[in-house]
Image (cartoon, rainbow, N blue to C red):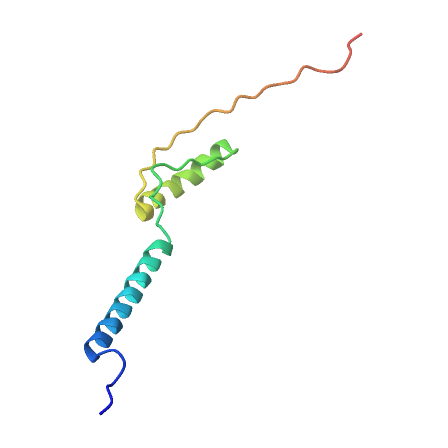
Amino acid sequence: MTARLGISRTTLIWVVVLIVVVVVLGGLLAYYATRPTVPPPPKEVLFYTWWATTGKVAGEHTWPLFEQYFHILVVPYVVPVLVVRRPSTQLSH
């Protein structure tokens, strides 16, 4: 009778189990390493507008929506705009 060459059945089972574990762990590691991260929600929102009255009225309609849908506390305030006038370039005689 000739001797059978090769690996035993138990060794083959252990090799297959080891390959499956390595593939599953590698897949999980790749998934967690490449999944998109969720940025933290903003703590405040700053709105810019150049219309004093219209911007304030629009903000009064918009600000409650941010509190309702995004759970962001809105503290409205209006910053007055400083108007700088340039000196006249006309020569007076």
